[in-house]
Length: 107
Image 1 (cartoon, rainbow, N blue to C red):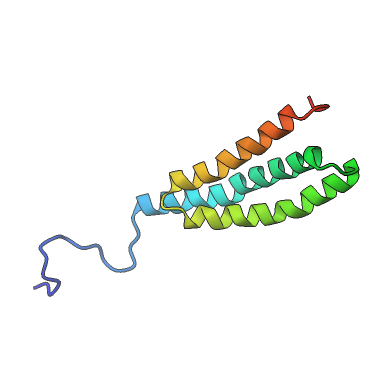
Image 2 (image 1 turned 180 degrees about the vertical axis):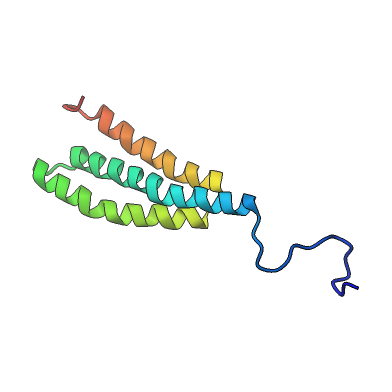
């Protein structure tokens, strides 16, 4: 006899559904691959947007991109859903990519 008070069948403790595993895998890919893409686009955008010598702008962009990658990874697991995690990473990456493509002197 069950002492939980409900008639719904409960999953045994320690068993994780396939849907949950897929959501965690998607968030992990968003953090790793999506975060890398966002950080790379950020570094490139800073390299073309900062009013410094090209080598200095690339250096600053590269150094700050590690913070962007870390923030993207945090966001991937803080978002309410895996879809929202991807959207929150791909949207800024698209903006950074647009900055690179629209910058004068880059083709």
